[in-house]
Image 1: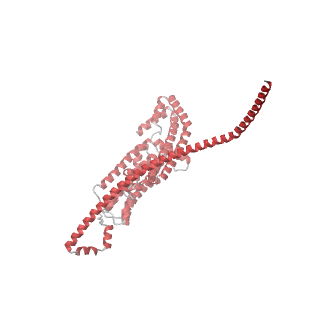
Image 2: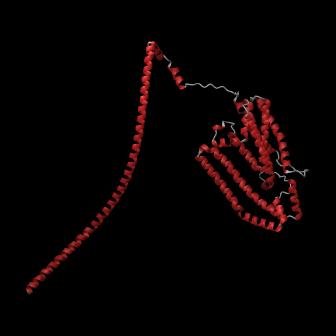
Image 3: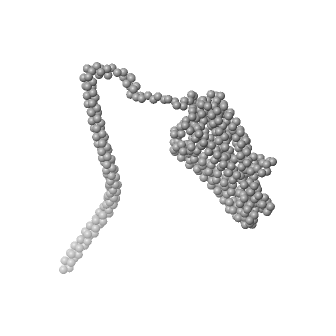
Amino acid sequence: AASTVGAAADAFGTATDDTRAAARALQTSVSDALPGLNSAIDSVNSTAGRFSGALDSTRTLLQESSDLLDGVDDGLDRVDGLIDSFDGNLSGIESGLRTAKTDILALNIASDGSLLHSVTDLDSDSIGRFLSTPAEVESHAVYPVRSYGSGMASLFTNLSLWIGAFMLMIIFRTEVDRAGMRRLTVGQAYRGRLMLLGALSVAQSVVVTVGDLILGVQNVNPLAFVGTGVLTGLAYLTIIYALVSALGHIGRGIAVALAFIQIPGATGLYPIEMMPDFFQSISPFLPLAHGITALRETVGGFYGDHWWRAMGLLALMALVAFVAGMLVRRWLSNVNRQVNDQLDVGGLIISEKVEITGSGYRLSDTVGALRDREGFRDEIDRRWRRLRENYALWLGLSVIVGVLGVVVLGVLARMIPDQKMLFFGLLCLWFLLVIGFIAGLDYIRQSYRRAHDVSEMSENELQLAVADKGEQA
């Protein structure tokens, strides 16, 4: 039994050694195979990623192929329609050829071929000229104008009258000196100065129109030509005088801008239908358009009531300008005085001494100071402090917004070159809005200053100010 146990123990030991050796060999094999297995797994993952991308690309290509096939299908449908149309055209050609064949056979039978022979002898050059110009236009001038100069005389004569009226506003003062005329009102001064300038405008108009006649400008009636020029010059003077008298230097700027806008917009160079939409829309409101129309009637001939309508509209514009200018001149007396005071302080731009009837103070301020002096002073001081704190901010913002608006309009004009004239008109309007806002802001500031001066006036001074306002009204 001991020998058997010993043999079994030896066999177990041998088996243990073999098992240990096999385990070592298995460990070695696993250690060697594991990196390769990891590399294979990474390769499989990479391949799977590429395969997924390939699937996405294939899906996109399939979608594009489907769209392309749809487009090809639509194209084939259109080609099918074109083929049908071409088939119809061929059928028409075939029918025409058959008709021509029948006609030729009939002509041949009727004239034994002599007429067909004459067809072959036709002049090909004459036939070519006829086919190129099958119709000739004959023009019959109903109101003929002999020369180009006479045709353009209406534009340049009206432009001269406009510039002449504007130059009167530069050479002569629009303000009236009240020395020796204590009771002179704003309306009387406005009308009196307009009458003086009107006499000078008549002289200008006579010189311009008579000069046209001396140079040989065509006309149907010299008196009508000169009279139309005189009336037109007076209308232009009334409009420009209203702008300058009411708005000062701003009115002069508007008059200059109108001169530039009216050259293309007043049918002087080309018919208004050939101009951009912007000028077509504003043409009825431009004085020069009606002045040119009226003067053209005296050059080429009167047609219907065109002259009366043009002069009537021009007279209506002058009347509106006269009334509006007189009213606005009275309402903006303080504004004009404050603006000219600022210009006088600057010393760079010429300023006028604005002659104002009355005290120059607002009636509401003087009445408010008479009613409750302390309350009026406190309210004015509160508003003045608020404005003084925000004045610089508002002024800076207005300048920045004005510059940005100019840049935006310039970029749009560059991007849309066909509408440059429209953007030019918008630019002029934008300048006027910005200048008007800045002027209004400064007017409010000056008004508060003058209202503060009212609060410091004595009782007698306030009563005299109210009495002066009553006399002015």
